[in-house]
Image 1 (cartoon, helix red, strand yellow):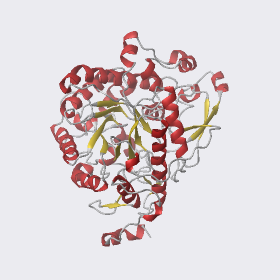
Image 2: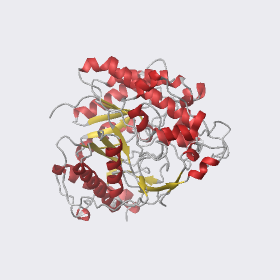
Image 3: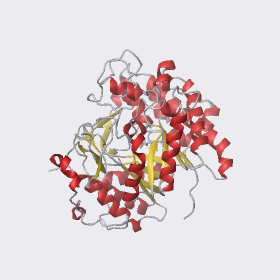
Image 4: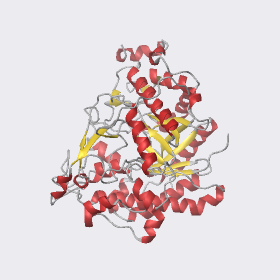
Length: 504
C-alpha cells in the first residue's frame, strides 16, 4: 500500500443556505426525498485505501490539566465556572497517563487511524514563546505509540481550547494578532511532528465555535451582547460583529498555516500538502471570498479580504472534514432581515427547526439518508472534494448500558450511507466513529456518552470496558458481515461485577 501524501485540513462543513456558516453538517432540506441506505455490507465493499478510525480530543480525553507545565485553556475556565453541569475535564479519561493502554484497545478494535488534537496550552503554555519540553515529549510519545502499532494519526491543532493567556491578552480570535500566534504554533507542530503526521486539521468546527462563543455566548469564551445571549448574561462581546471577526481570523489563520506548510515543509517531504477541512466555511476556501448573500446581509459588519488574502485563501482546502450527528430542517425567514439590530443568526435569514434530540440527552434518530443527501450536495456544489467523515456517533445517557444496541444501529446505518455515497460517486476517503471512549463531552460534560468503550469514573483507575458497539465495529473492521446487528453479544466478564449495577 502506497504511503499517503501529507495533508492539512480545517474541520467541519456547511451546506450553503443563505450564508455559508451554520452548525455541524446535520442539515436536512425540507421536502427532501427518502433514500434508503445499504444494509448488508462488509469492509471489502469499501475502496482498499478507505480509512476507518475513531477519535477524541485533548481537553476531552487527556486530563492532567495542571501537570508538566500545561496552562489553562478557555475550556478550563468555562468548565470551572460551572457551565457544564459542574463537570470539568481535570482528569477526564487520564489519557495523558494511559495512552499506551488506549492504543492497545485501538489495535484490538482494528482501527486504521485515530483522530487526536494537540493542546496548544500544553505544548506552548503562554500561547507563544518557549515550547514546553514535557508537552512535546508527551505528543511525540503518543504519536510514536500510534504509528508503531500501525495506526495513522490525524491531528487537529485547535479543538475549542484556545490558551486562556491569549484570550486574556487580546481577546483571542477576535483580534488579528491571533493569526501570527496560530501560524507560529502550527509551525512548531509541523516541525516537531510532521515527519510522522501526514493528516493535519487546523481548526475544529469553526462555525460552532464562533456561534457559541461569540454570538450566543453558550460556549467559551462566552462573548455575546444583549439581546442575543442565549443562556448566560455577558459583559463582554458584541454579537453583531464578533462572530464575523472570529470567523475571518480563523480563515486567515488557516490559510496562513497552509501557506507556511506548503512553502516550508512541502519540499522536505517531496510530496504535495493535501487536506484542509472545514464545515461551514467551504465557500471562502473554494472561491476566496464570502458568498454574496452573506456580504449583502451582514453589510459593513463583515470584514473584507484584501486581494492578497483572497488569493492565499482560495484553494487552501485540500479536503473537507465532515462532522454529522443529526439532521434539522431549514425554512426561509427573510423577514428577519428587516430588523435593525441583527446578529449572525439573524443574518442567516433562515429558521432552523431542530429535532428534540439535538440539545438534550436523548438518542439521535437513525436517518442515514440525510447524511447521504448532504454528501451528494457537497459533491454537486463544491466539485466533489476529498472528504473525511471525522465525527459521527450516537449519544446515550451516561451509565446506560454496555449493550448499546442503539449505537450499533446508528453506526450500521450511517456507515451504510457512506458506502452508498461512494457508490453515488462521492470522493469519501475515511470514516471516524465518535468517540473512541466516553469522554468529557463539550456540551454535556459527563451526562452523555458517545464512546465505543465505557470509562468507569467510579474506579480510581478509570478502567475501560468495551461496549457492544466496540465489538460490532471491531467485527466489521476485521471483515465481518454487518447483517444481523443484534447478533453480536458481549462475553460475560467477571470484571464487570464492580460496575454491574450500571448495566442490568
